[in-house]
Amino acid sequence: MDLNITREQAWALLTEYNKDPFHLKHALTVEGTMRYFAKLLGFEEEQDFWGIVGLLHDLDFELFPDEHCIRGQAILREKGVSEDIIHATASHGYQLTVDIKPEHTMEKVLYAVDELTGLIGAVALMRPSKSVQDLELKSVKKKYKTLNFAAGCSREVIGRGAEMLGWELDYLIEQTILAMRSCEDAVQTV
Ligand SMILES: [Fe+2]
Image 1 (cartoon, rainbow, N blue to C red):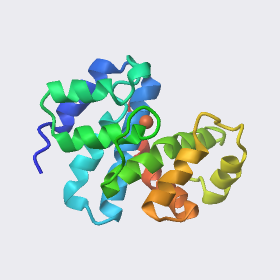
Image 2 (cartoon, helix red, strand yellow; image 1 turned 180 degrees about the horizontal axis):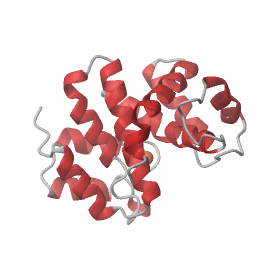
Image 3 (cartoon, rainbow, N blue to C red; image 1 turned 90 degrees about the horizontal axis):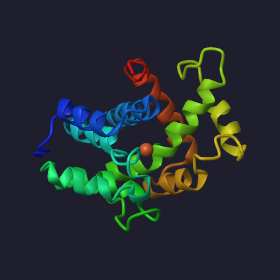
C-alpha cells in the first residue's frame, strides 16, 4: 500500500496545523492505540497506515472545528496523500459532519477508540499516578456509567463503535487500556 506520506511527514503536517499540546497528545494517543490494534488484529504489515491515520484523524479540528473531517480531506488531498488515508480519517466523522461510513476494520477501530481514549485518559488523570499503567477496566466502567464525568466523550459513539466491530464493550475498553499503556511514554513527549 502506497501511503504517499511518511510518519515524519505526517508529524510535520500535524504540527503545522496543531499547536495545542492537548490536541498533539490526543493525536499521539490515537496513533499508538491504532498501532496496538493493528498488531492485535493481524494487520501488523499495515501498522504505519493505521498509525498515520490515528495521528492525522483530527488534523483540521484545531483551526476548522466547524468543518471537521471536511477541511482535513482537502488539506490531505492537496498534499497528495493516499485516498485510503483520506477516507479513513474522514470516516470518524460519520453521522456527525460527514456521510463517510467506517468500512475497513481499521476505520471501525478509529471510530470506537477516538472518544474512548479521551474517557480513559480522563479517568487516569483522577488517579494519584495520573497513569493508565495501574488503571483497570472496573474503574473505567464506573466512570463510563457516570454520564456527567467527561461528558464530552460520547458514550453513544463508543457503544456504536463496539457494535460496528461486533465486540463486547468490556473487550473494547480492556484492549484500549492496554493500547494506551503501550504508548503512554510516547504521548508524554509533548
Ligand atoms: Fe479524535
